[in-house]
Length: 246
Image 1 (cartoon, rainbow, N blue to C red):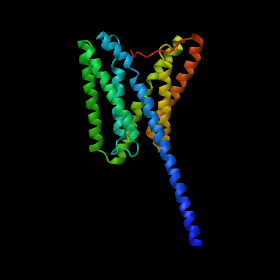
Image 2 (image 1 turned 60 degrees about the vertical axis):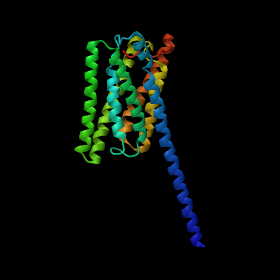
Image 3 (image 1 turned 30 degrees about the vertical axis):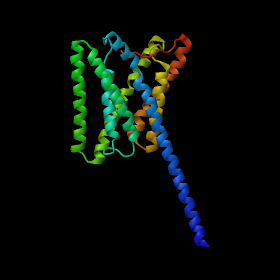
Image 4 (image 1 turned 90 degrees about the vertical axis):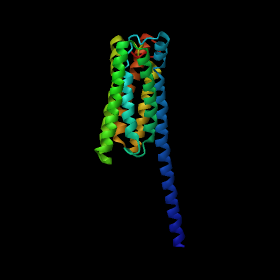
């Protein structure tokens, strides 16, 4: 009789453990998928800019540097998420590989329609960025063991993400200075906040310092942008519009 009682208790405990594990997996996967979806909104946001560039066959006063920084950041974060660097963060790989493809496409279009001087400059910078990434990849694989490699790439990904998340600081400063949200579209700010919050949750669930720290900073900046939008749009009656990155 006691045997069956023990077996029943063990079975119940195993079922509870499996249910908890499955719920944890669902939460991780859901947070990562949400982050991927919101990131996709950010990746397609420059499309109006490039429609204008293609239509006018000129890059005008636009800069290609934001896309170059984003490309390098996506490549580094994608490399960090690969199985031979980190375990169990495959959704970091998917979002950053898609992001890298978008940024590379934007840069190629920029170079095609730039004037000869800027074409040469941006082409050189693109080759330099790709060579830098290739060097990082080579050094991380050849000179470091797995734990050290993960730490090195982790800190590099944090630095690249924080530098990318720092760009809203210029927008925040502009909004406060002009008391207008004209250059801070609501849906772009909302997507930034939701993407950062999703990957913050993803990193926390995985206990991955290198994911939740930069995305926690991104979440705070997203909250600031949304609060500023609520404050200044109510005062000025501005309506958001699609961004043109200058």
